[in-house]
Length: 351
Ligand code: 5GP
Ligand code: MN
Image (cartoon, rainbow, N blue to C red; front, side, top):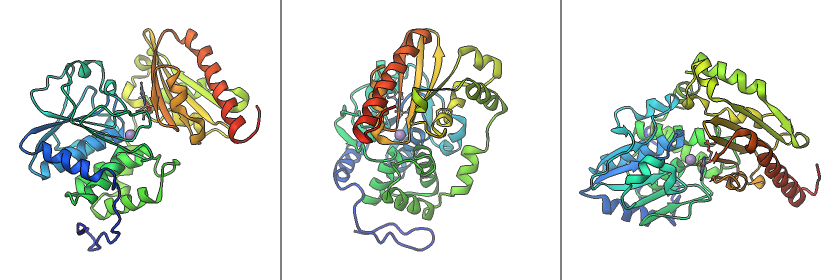
């Protein structure tokens, strides 16, 4: 099998397949896209991995002479807007599909595209994702729950299939992988992730330039909002659970936008002794939650499942209907139960 020549003249000498179980389905999926128009759809309130996957897949389809565009119910968060430059990327709800082949990326289930987008979704041809709770919903389900990011799966599949990865595609994939692995620090960071990351750098992704664009363009309003969530932090459950929240008025008062809250949940996780961090956004009649743990035995997806959500073992989320005062005691009880059970099983400790 040949490997693409990389920029520094090295060749991908590692002849293993990155995703042997998925690569023929991926080729077949793209074969069915030949001569068609393709819509690559991501989840509402997208993160770096979602946008990276949408951009990278559209770019590769275009490089294979397949007409493609990306569509998302929400706008692209500012921190990753640079990766979408030059890529046809549409927003709007409801979106009207007109006979395109549809591929969903980074969506654990169909509803993740958002209520307005979901109303008009036609039959789904492809489902490329890394969420444990993804049960499959497309003609071609390419789901690998152990993967760190949808962008990791795409990077591996592009290499396995010898598809062209240019500098901007490598940049999009890199942005997705760094944001979903916490800059290569989460337990999902395997040797394979680093091998693929090295490949992306050889294809032209610049780690320093991308880090500067993602992390060093913060607004003062985001910092003002951050002050509030730090100020409200509560540590409970014997020091194992940290939670904090923002209220609707905080956005108007600080000038920050919903898109600017990404990463806030990680401040709680960084506290010494905290195993589970929770961040809540209190909205009109609902609570949106983000959950994180540094240890995959704690199963954030199961905790989120109690409130109608899902996700990964270390990162999960949900939107729950009701008031925050009703929600909080139920959440605390469910979190304490999970912490006690997990601690009991894994480390034979009590708190
Ligand atoms: P975040 O906290 O960044 O919003 O989401 C963390 C993880 O949980 C993401 O991988 C995301 O896909 C998943 N997630 C967030 N919200 C929901 C939700 O409402 N339902 C499901 N099934 N997953 C969610
Ligand atoms: Mn992801």
